[in-house]
Length: 348
Image 1 (spheres, helix red, strand yellow):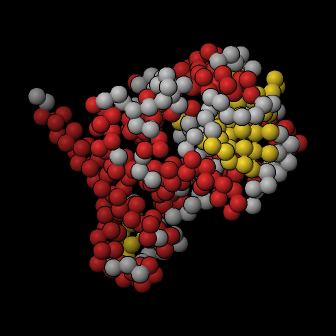
Image 2 (cartoon, rainbow, N blue to C red):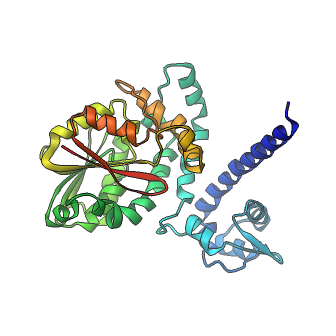
Image 3 (cartoon, rainbow, N blue to C red):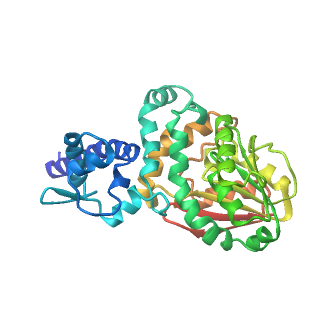
């Protein structure tokens, strides 16, 4: 046994246990508005933070200290600071790097541990709708900042001719729309176009419809319960899949249906978790997060459906290209990318 290797691993394991414990504290801080109360990045004592938030000062001192020990905050002479950079990730929901809300996805994985154990001992199936409710809200809050920051300004312009169609008035289908964040972002940017979001999870359709009403776009946006393989409508100018195709049991069947529903000059926008094509090339922080999430969410959801292809969140561009080639598409390319996403274009 290599004793140095053992000590190095134990250091990593303890660090990861501390990270998991700190994420539980992040969830508390998000729910109680503690980060927002510190978003000005000014020094503050636990007592002043307690008066601002109505929380217990002694517990706040411990919560703040955990953040300092983790490198999330700074400490000077009894006062605590949430630096501007950390505030962008933890307090400011309009920031493109806001991540505190996405912690709820990790929280749901702990809630669903017994369900995954049963799936591991069985056929591998754990359907999306069977997860803890915080999975659905957490997923929306994890992806929404990226959609707001990049979808209109970078991703759609990277597709050939799509923005001009949207400005003139296009028919758009958003498949696997969830709570409708991506659909609503597009609708707000392109008032001449009409959008319909489809999702097989009925409670998400209800929430998405509420979101559209709140955003004032219900006259041009509809949310309908439907499956990727048989959603209604023809002659769409744009069909979108945002972080969902790899979760499907039969992504090839879904792509075939999209091929039929798309105009001859129409476009597929496929947004998928960033991944290289092999495990060795995905050994990095993003790959670590997405493989862990895929074990609990993406792959068991696919295995719960017909075909059960099980692409997983780290499918990679080559495997995704094969899906669309098998479905009859002749054109497939990487339009652009972010640290968290591949943005892919397919055409007939």
